[in-house]
Length: 51
Image (cartoon, rainbow, N blue to C red; front, side, top):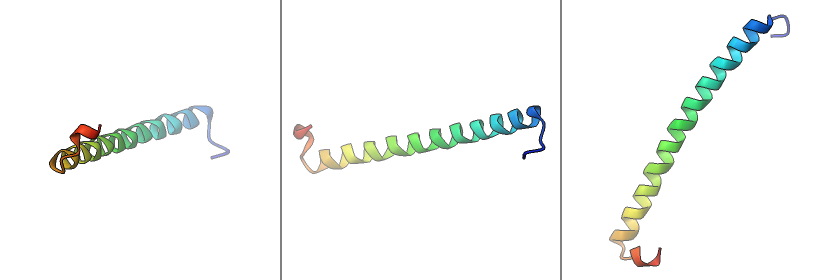
């Protein structure tokens, strides 16, 4: 990568940035799913009054 032009480096970083944003979005969605599951389980367990 040391001999790559500045344009090539910028293109690479933009692509990597896009990939990481997509990965973060997927992880955020997974976290929301897990939080929802926890809330439902607490409700089913009768702990909803504890916060």
